Image (cartoon, rainbow, N blue to C red; front, side):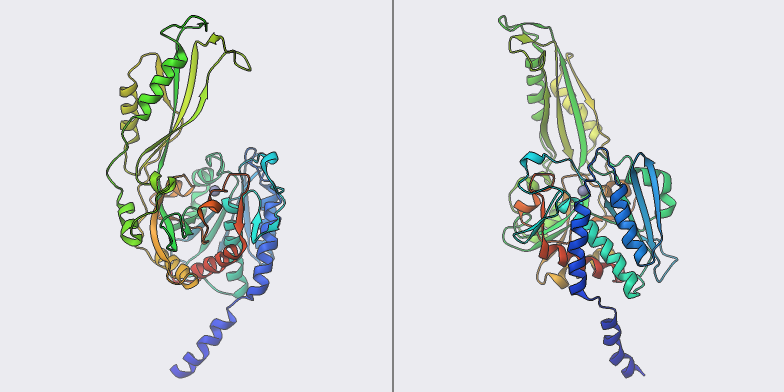
Length: 436
Ligand SMILES: [Zn+2]
């Protein structure tokens, strides 16, 4: 009997294997169609993107529930039943919105979904419609092949991530948590690369934590006057001094344990802006606003000016203490420091879980010899909202990209390598059919 079973098992596995040639073709078509919908946020009109996902899910017999926080913002949920229904589900998180485009700067139509030089081009190709299609196909393939996952899988597609998620993940958590209630969350975040995390070694980082967005607005007030006669309380000069003092707040020197783990797994990290940012607290001067009139007059000293600092703090750093330190260093009654974001210290997710192991195994199956490591990411993702609730959440981009390609996210040449996009469908599918 045992002999018969072992003889039969490979056949069973074979029957469960999708027709990959067909899947590849469909994946490219779907991503093109998805990118051609300009779901720019604001206003996060995601009706058409939700229609596309709904159509594909319903075509394989899955039930879709749609939510409408406001306007044409649509969030949707679908659930694939697992073998053990007593376990909490895996939530796969995706956002359907994209950032706006500077159309004049694009060399291809940002909403054309063009295929050129081995890449699929367009706004959202990397962030995150490419992953969205990988997730959609992985789920619909399981359903089509009749494969029951180890536990329920809930796909959650949201309308708003790019303007902080108030109508997307945060809204779903606030209003419909019971429909999700995940054991784990899988979102965007990490990535595979040969030149970003390490130099010349194929490395996949799976994000287990992110930095805290601590956005500060500095406002200086002074006395207005004629530019021909300098005065000591020039708001611009007061602001300038305050900015320099704030930016001199020393970055933490204590390395985060996840970065220690990265170094143990990878060896020496590559030196670039990303690896720099995950090793310390950082401050970027992002906006400056001053002057009287439009365009601002050169010969008028304004009475007020303001700037914003995008500060990103490592997990575990107390943001209130950081802000006090900024205020203490500026130490000028003519300058106010206002917090304009909601920094969340969510901690980091444990990587010693069956899901993390399944992700690692699937990546290695399709990228033999790669190093797979937990990582921190310097930017924010929706996963933080689930980590805040204590749910282990991982960021996975199952594709190998180089620094130049990754940098096209939010830029005017956003694109995804087609071969890696297709490999990512297989990786996602293998993760979802593993024992996690
Ligand atoms: Zn994104």
